[in-house]
Length: 211
Image 1 (cartoon, rainbow, N blue to C red):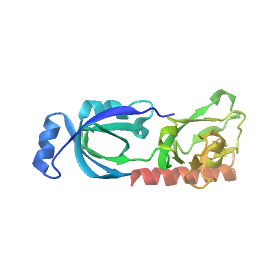
Image 2: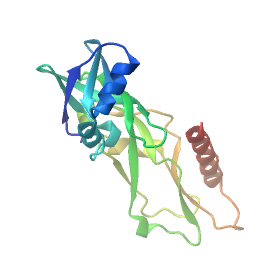
Image 3: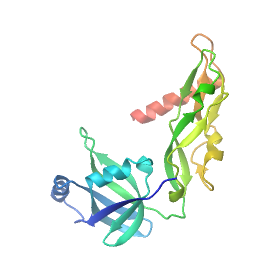
């Protein structure tokens, strides 16, 4: 489960491109805090501390204990704006959450037991590398391990197959029939309905990523 990471923030003036540029030159990132019981509040955070907060095991799903003038608020990072070349964060939203209410997150799927797949010349098609779930913030898993043991050509694992792997009370955030992984037939060996479905979903996923 995600562990809280601490991040200190300082209040900043509400507006001004010049002020934001000054903060960036000083190694700070302008941000806005809003959400559960929090009025929109402009702040800034140290760029290095932010990098470490968002590059731990939970990645962008890290639950951040944001400390502003002695007050601690649980937040998650949203809407990161990055430099087109350097990719450093120029601005971000810090969304305040209620630890007892579910939030929508996307969790990486790690396939395990790959050596136990009955390939028979076919190939494994990992269609969805992240899956949407609704979960209480402090129960957010860093990733989900999905076993492909025993799968063979034409077999498929769907979003509904991860339900038993979720924390108590968590839910999948999309159609349970969405394909996660299939075993496709070898080239020239014909196609199965599951393989065609997985290929179509992969194309849709690629299209959405390119948009």
